[in-house]
Image 1 (cartoon, rainbow over the protein chains, first blue to last red):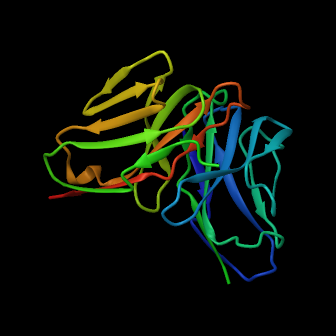
Image 2 (image 1 turned 60 degrees about the vertical axis):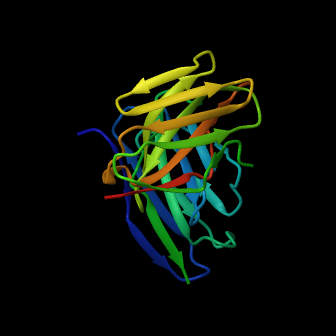
Length: 113
Length: 112
């Protein structure tokens, strides 16, 4: 059963702590993406990776970090430097990039208090 | 910055009616995609229309693209309560790093 998974679905953290969100895909896709969604808003691109061991900043990368050591995995770390981390985080993947249809995971809702 | 902007922000209709959502964008594009998001879930791809296409159909969905006006519309015919969701357009700007840019979405409510 191919797909893209994110864990956990809900995550609670205290302010000042780093937290890592998991994203795994078994679709054999080259490209992976992290988006942030705030209530009633569209998606904003945080980071993307077009190939293993390579990634680029998106529109709102400050306070976030990623790694792409394996094709299947693209974890996102929300650092204490991110001023307003509470949001819904969505991971996606695509075969190729840009023009390609993106497949999304179910999302992780992060709440920082 | 948001490349695509959907209109209206919210739409409420009765089951069986048609729903039309519009998307406007600012720069030239390679293609435009429409996605659906149920509350608290990930997005699901609905349809992709290329810049050289004017209309595309998929089941009860009809998408049009007018590159001269930099706009697209998504029509859902014979709506059902299960169509209740947010709908987003996403553009692939030509000449860019080729990443999708999403609009802020239209929240569609279909009343039974």
